[in-house]
Picture 1 (cartoon, rainbow over the protein chains, first blue to last red):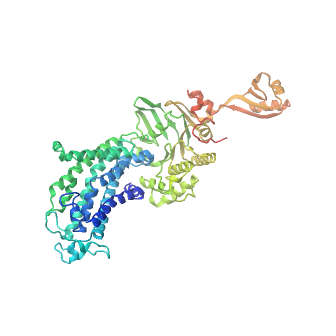
Picture 2: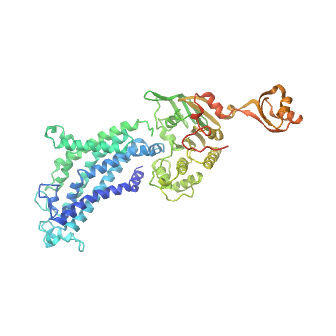
Picture 3: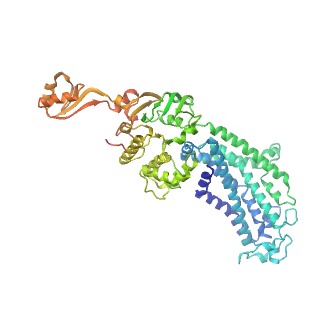
Length: 299
Length: 314
């Protein structure tokens, strides 16, 4: 059943269209920055964006920060919101269940499918934005100059003619947010860690959307419901008056992936982020199961 | 094959199915008749474990449903109201996908089983076009093919000939009779009386959620003891048969007699030119309308079916 769900995911045009859109946003931003050389000053705008002119290899981190607040959760909510409701309104749900596919099995397959989608989307953003960063924004100045405090220069080969701005940049090699240099291996590890954390961060939204998807036959309704929850959470996270509930909000630790780029990695919020997402997944999947397992399928 | 005892389903205050005790036997071609909204689909969904009964018991293929529904469903092919498929995939891909989704769909035999099922329903030649581009009739055939892929012992078909043209209805009827001859029990629901009349050996009639009639079609349609005669010389026929004639309408007579053969011999002996002579049987329409409060407009009596469903003409 899991392979069937993955096949359905892969064969949907929408899947690739959505991922394409998510990847397109960082590309557009990169083009603007490359053309104007106007990156936001440090401490303002999206995370890492101030540093990318100095080092295009940092662009994956900046790109993830760009898509995290809206694009990615919207995509995940749409895919997860459709999981049960979409099958119900298309009429395929009754045929799957009569095939038979166990209801619990179906829910788990859907969650795995949504997780895979998120992972693929995050990986696609990382890979395309790395290419964007290197080709459009240029590799680190260190690479161009030939000295490498971070030990990076030797491993990066800019494409022929692909780094038009490289020689114009002034900047440093890759350093952590804490100011100490990172080796390539460390950087790769940390990017992978950040990708994993961001994927997991989306699971809470996914679980909420899947739960709503078992309540209604409207895929759109389920997706919007999950997004409304997220918007509410993002509002409360910045509201001092709501500090009592903040540690339990699904978006509270969303930005903790940045801590992967500190030296040493600052684990506290990362662990809490994983923990809170696990709680949301367990609670909402249990609710989805309780509702779906006993529901009359009348569509 | 299928038995239910006092099966009841309430949706809120609405009793969709009330105390239905169904009895479908092995080898039956069972037709569940009822006007739209009489509870047919709810009943079918309960048999398949999609809708949970409020009270009562269900046994399908000797297993309790919904408790052991996972054990019986692999042996059942089902069409549940309209067929449904992923519109962006081809018909073949849809059948393969559904087959791969559940148990008992051996990958080794999948291609052959899918091809066989498509051929059975007359879709052998379908190409890679997505289902989105299919006509209503093709979708219906694809839905039937999906029910046949695993060569089930029991077919549960809700309105199987929906959207088919007269030729398609005939094809599917022949297919179902053929499968039934090979030992497949067929349970279908329909609001189309001619379809059930032409196909089924046993019928049940649902009216407002109640099973108001369940019997062999043959015994319901026993000769009524009257003979319908059509003749070019009605005067002489009336004179010959005298008080046996119950009713005369021009050249057509209704005659009380248990034995049409004897009647025919008398008429021919008296030199009456008989154009036709048949033992009267009650039509399914009369039987059904007798036991239901429904007007004929709620049934698919020919020419009364809204929405463009094409009837088979006998």
